[in-house]
Image 1 (cartoon, helix red, strand yellow):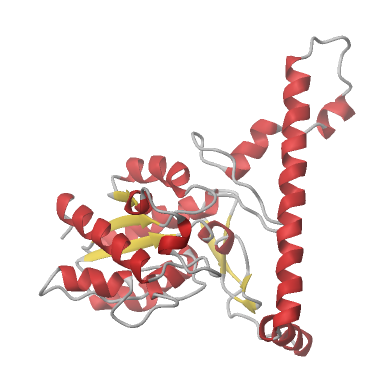
Image 2 (cartoon, helix red, strand yellow):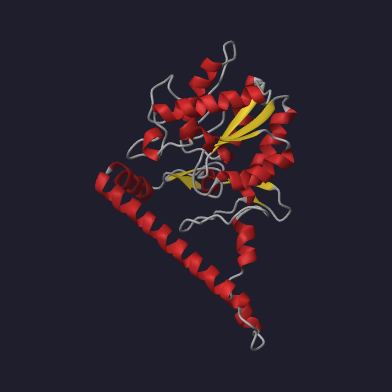
Length: 286
């Protein structure tokens, strides 16, 4: 199982997480939990290449979280440097930022203050949240302006320089979504392009298939909605896909997540594991 903190079981005891519960649902089957908090699809692909493939798995289950889109488009996470894949002009993945550079003294001090000092951490978090709200407002305003221009009758030719400066809704959509999916809200200073994630999934699926294992994907609910991003891609690849949203139908967020943390609590992991186990059986994966 390749995943991030949700697959790792952040906040619950050993035996209570989704992977441990899945293993208990399939006696005689060994589940290797390769989930690492903070990993995106990029580092999960690297793990499979360097360590996972050597385990000769029968099935590789990818747990995809919406924040993987951000992880896959960044060269750092939680104020640590990390490897990063970029798309070249031919649309092929190119691994960069390897070897991963060490943190400078200034970065180490900044990380310590921001992540281990509660007041500064809250200030930093509020700054990010405010930035998200402002960027979302600016995107909505740009779209409204663009749509209004499209609906308004043309009264004069548009000069070339004005046309170049106008927001390009179609181009923005291609940068932030699949051809059939919605645009992805961007975070300040982050490239939320889904193309890198889509190519990472395609390459991972091909390498898992080449190893003789079967590939399957389950997505964790969040924003942007991973169903809109993954459905078309995984359908085209012929990969079984389970959105875990239905595991929490009829429940309030506070029932299956921690009060002050976005991760699943014990109930959340149990419900997700029950839903995933039934799906793995129905699809004939296990």
